[in-house]
Length: 84
Image 1: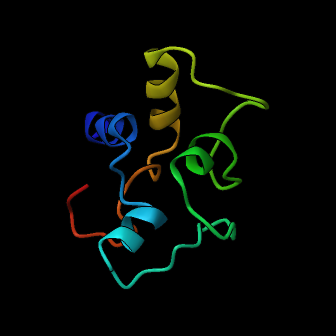
Image 2: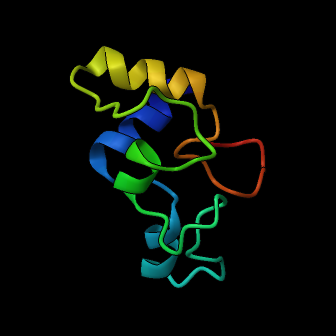
């Protein structure tokens, strides 16, 4: 499942707040950590619900894969349907 979330992240086509807004899906744009806009950068760099080192920036593909492995909820749908 890491591969699916990796592609969503790289292509910036992830089911996050801005995705819900663009496709008029009745979901909150707010992140689960309470931040008002759940954006790609917010999920990667500053969401307090996700685990990362201080001032972490993904420099290599391996860094991004490690981040996704540590954070299975990153770049997934909020509702669970067995997919995503």
